[in-house]
Image 1 (tube, rainbow, N blue to C red):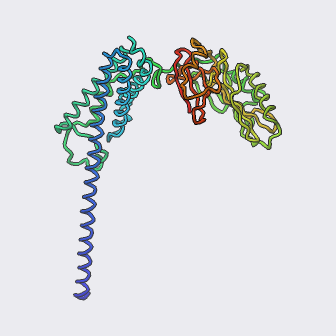
Image 2: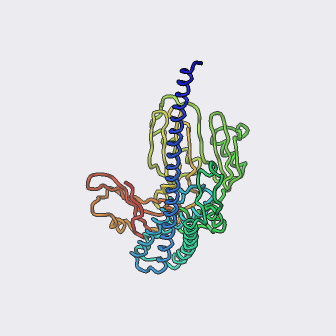
Length: 419
């Protein structure tokens, strides 16, 4: 290689090294900025968590001294808002908060409990039982807030370290110190996250009692529904739960039965063009329900696809439609057979209903800017899965838009509005 060629080659090599060095320097600078931004975001999330839990604890403590309904409701709103903010900030911290499920459940429980108390507290304040539960929540929130403030102080003084999602990549030469996550996990182990008794989303739900059907009776019911002999059924699967559910197949039909009765039917065959009318299909559906001895039902809606007609039935008790308890039956319009059935939401127990408010008193709860187009007795589910007797008013507002207003027949107050 000539001297000129060597010079040119060396020049290119030097230029390439300079460009590579510049790229590395720019990349390192950007990586450091990203790390600083991530660290700042993590610190900000932790600061938000500390402030939110501290605010929630303060609102809970104030609620122990509130007697005015307006003040009680306002404090409930503060607890709910602070708990929601704390939960959101906790989830954005740089470690797996799935291990902190008890702390997360405490924040959810405290916020939802306060949310459930707000409507009644606005009028009557807190009862003795509610004050006792608020006192227990206040103590837990105070302990949690004290821990977070101490961790915040240790973090600011360099005695504790905030976790980093990059730790696996840069775990050499890190200063020794206790991680924030380790302290929270230690507190998590001693936290009592038992749910309170209240009508809310996170309250304990009553377990459904098992039915009376034996395994042989359940199998006989499945065979009767499928229209075959018991020996022709093939068991697909079963499990030993409260309901003892078992599923059988017969041809292209799948039948699921529990100890409480028939739960579902499904067919896989293709349905040809329909020959039955919707009214005839409805009669077929009602006859099928009669064979199951499910007669206290009322049709609330239906649909017809041209090959399948589906009917939604709701239970009737005390002249009220139990909107969350009923069955759905689908009829094939080519031969009138039951194509599908869903009875998993059917309740075999009667609801405890107290109609302390009459229709006229309930109508007085409607605002002046709506007109009632009709009313009916129904039951709906509360947030705590309790059945509430209500008057359902179908209304129109000033713009002609439809809405439904539900008035609790026990309290005489509005409890839900659907638009």
